[in-house]
Image 1 (cartoon, rainbow, N blue to C red):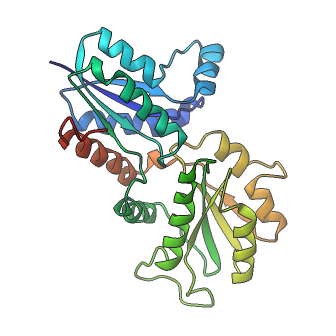
Image 2: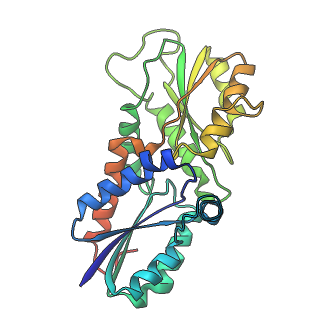
Length: 279
């Protein structure tokens, strides 16, 4: 039986960050199941159109990819989502999987990064590995995408867990005026927690500088423009205007080996399910 691995992400039109993040995830996922042929799909129609019009590159939607795989005779297809939360983009995949399931003998779907309590715990452990060296009154602020979908609460949940656990709660953490606070916070571009809430909170704590990092698979448009640019509405400029100098870091989550390992674990979990349980 022909077997395929379909890796699905929101996508990006930036080739360098695609290579560093999406391709890196695809490579690790493919290595975990070498008996499967690797394929790619994006859920963002806007990015698919941009790549086609600008670069002449055709990327399938999940629906198109599954239809092609069925036509090519693949009957055992494993799909892994590279989305962060179980929001609108992931639900697109679920609907398309349900629609096309009759075309396959086996069709499994691995869940997004934050899909269980243990995922939040593992994500915090993974983020510890990319924390920069901080002065006593500096913090890291992670920028999530946000969503109108009720899954936006995932960002507030992660922020709450970081606060409750005094993230990163590592040996040798600072001793000083801000020792009772976490060293990192989470905000979202398009929903709660808004950046203004974080600015007010960190200013009240006496924070004198922040490092901005994307809580997104890739460091694409949001990271480059909404987080790190010199535009007056960017997070960098808003922190600067509040008297808290901001240093942006343009690295996506896909560059973190521990986060790639989480996606591999989700794929393995899906493959270990029965046909009835999967997806």
